[in-house]
Length: 90
Image: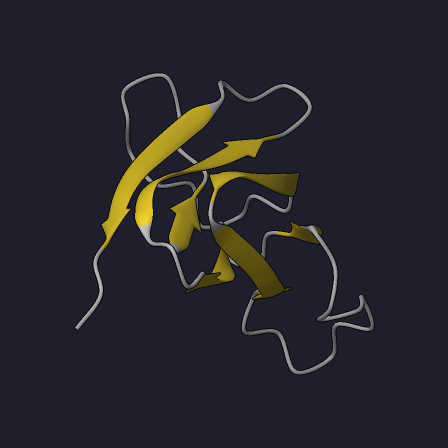
């Protein structure tokens, strides 16, 4: 899931480097995080990542049961954002 840092007018801020923390509710696992910066030394297997060019991401894997999942992104000085997901069995 892609997370973008937005300004007060909801425009992406390409110079932002805020640290974003991801949390999950539901039957899912946070596999890792990323930001596309090849020089970044932050761990990929974590729940937080600094934005690069205003962007970062979380990689989520649904569990066996499926159902409702909520991915929340928070950061210092940022409004929290929540993405509702629904995992179904194929």
